[in-house]
Length: 473
Ligand code: DUC
Ligand code: ZN
Ligand code: ZN
View (cartoon, helix red, strand yellow):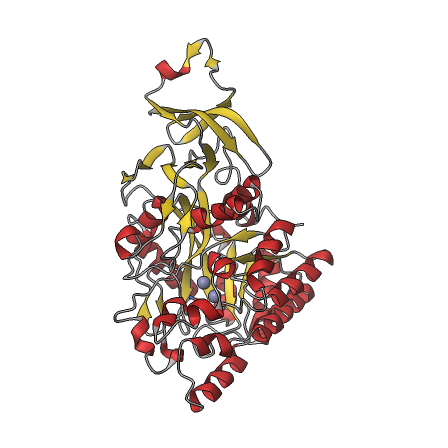
């Protein structure tokens, strides 16, 4: 077992910061000590195998991205990051855990689908990974299977109110699944958009010759998100199911979540970097077919309506609890271009797993959130929300030594294909400049990124069994 001392840095948690040294023994954090401490009379610097100098830098728990879709079959193609390429890119960006979605498609058995996802991920991940279970076909058999998910280390499942004919669940199916969710201690995750109404609007727009990517955003109007969010909240209220709404982008949907929370309901929401920085006008409305790069669902919202500012505010006030990416990358060539002349055929998804920690850190620099809140919404809350806290999301004795040394004096230019590590032929974040840099990343005690070098391996990441949520009211 090798030992590591991270010395001279500022350890930042969700509740505060202090100058401290972090002692790592093998895969675990052994102690967080006053700077320069000795342990049982031993000078630590000369006793450990590796010393990492973090002077002038932040030492934070590794990022947890609780919403990724590696190699997801979707929109007639497959998300372009494999578990190998996607988790490596995550590591580069300071994310040391992902929770991906195992998908039960229509007609499939849940446990078969889960086995298939284990087969895809096992031995392929640079960092630790867990699964949520998508239930794409709510029926008696899958409702029964949901009861066995906790034993599989899966404490959350996801339903879709969008995508009729693909993953869509109607209200009766949602009601039945939530009943099981409430009884078995599973978190219900919801893609909250009114799919049937969206499909009608898509048909209307296409019939009018409105085929550009911009109209993807028009068809998926905020009313579709607010209505579905409200409906999901009401069904959760009725059944007693804890509810977590994914990729919230409309300020009206946030208001629904906030009202439910103020009412004492176990209702939570995430947003994603794209809804904090990008807009319907600037990105989806880019000239020609360019906007396809940013086709995702929920869609980018209008900057004229200031949704983006509201998302930052909701993160400050805890009306939204955390930030994930919904990482679901597709290349322009051969994938996004399937939708030339028909926006509804553009595969939905944006890649961003590599950039989340940096993009949200920029919110600290820009005065939108405090430093501690950065740690909270990118690591600590994801750990608590999805039953990983103690092992993940915190720098404390006994926790996994997933640690990022972040340099506030560094700089990151997010550029083209060649300067990121995701398997994409473009970057949705090209041109973004970050006033900070991920200098060093440790995953379970092993340095996997250091000084702009990748030192990890695809066999390092382990499957993470998760407990029920530790965030419930
Ligand atoms: N939204 C996306 O943009 N991609 C994957 C699935 C989803 O709901
Ligand atoms: Zn979704
Ligand atoms: Zn998603």
